[in-house]
Amino acid sequence: MTVLVTGATGNTGRHVVTELVRRGERVRALTRNPAGARLPAGVELVEGTHTAPETLTDALDGVTRLHITATAGLADVGAELVKRAVEAGVRRMTIVWGGYVGPTEQAMAESGVEWTRLEPQEFMSNALTWIDSVRAEGVVREPFDLPSAVVHEGDIGAVAATALVEDGHSGKVYNLTGPEALTTRERIAILGAALGRDLDLDQITRQQAIDRLLADGVSVADAEYVVGWHSDPPMEARTVVDTVERVTGRPARTFAQWVSEHADRFTG
Image (cartoon, rainbow, N blue to C red; front, side, top):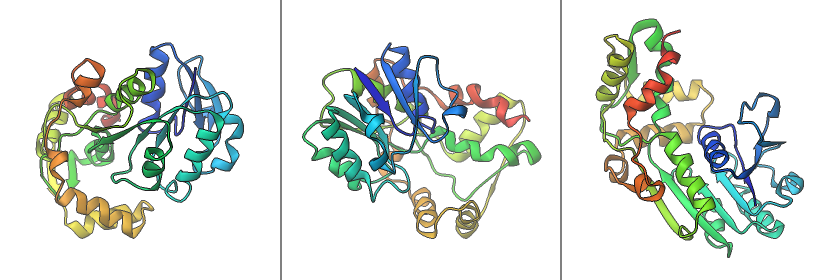
């Protein structure tokens, strides 16, 4: 069995690859930059992107399991990607949604093969956007201070790998959260304690938050969507569920654990 992981060096794809390798699976990793992939030994690296499915004939050759991360640019071609995967012989798929059920998610559900949709809420790694201001000023700038049951990207990868390898997950939709609903201030306090520093929250305006995303190249529509989501997170994002533990057999990792893994990045 060969598993193709698209977006294999991305925020969640990297963890899917790592977990599959840990389980002893044969993994083919699709990435735009194989030379800089930094993936575990034994992974087959293939250059490409899932947003150009017409180029993936070789990448899909011999693949029976497929992992997709819904990313910008996929909506217009996602149905074609799913169609080509099924025609190539893929019989089980997982997808990390993009925050809503779009064309790719729908095509997968209608594909006739086994599928599992992962619906993680806010990622713990969003805190990486704080690195520069924490290093320089000991400050985090965010517009809202609301609770969010942030989830570790490694747990998303573990759930995806489990669904790809083990039976019993076909047709399931898994809401994924961490084990705690934490406000922005509470996450900052956990980070500060790990760094041995007092960190402050500087609450910026909604428009400042939108402008910051625009400056990073995010579209107006996406910036307004992201900031709007954070201004009023859905109940699913604020309510802890035990999906990670039920699927993988181990508790979801805490934000404190995530911080311990990444603390050095805040101390440059």
